[in-house]
Image (cartoon, rainbow, N blue to C red; front, side):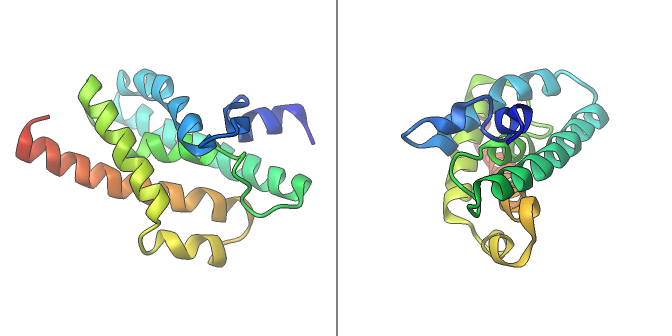
Length: 151
């Protein structure tokens, strides 16, 4: 397997963590978010699209090379989904913590239609799209929490 594809797919090796690789890999999304949050919203959105496209390619290539469907070592999908979870949310400590917790929750429970992605979509799309949907759910709930409780 290409070293660069492996490094990207595993979130620079964070996905190799023996315990909760998805949660550890998502942490790598925090500095990426902090960079994107300081940009114009179109740049932020373009960053999400670019990261997601790279994630689809790297995830698909990693699956093919490993012979496994959506192995836990792939965490670039969590990094992409986390960006969606915090899209256009102010970069405060509480927002990052709440966004992280909400994203991980929705990524784990895989509410409809996220649960269909793994079986209905091909290759890297199956790996990434459930995380994008989890990010959308997390973003909506986070925005409601900010609106209601001012966190």
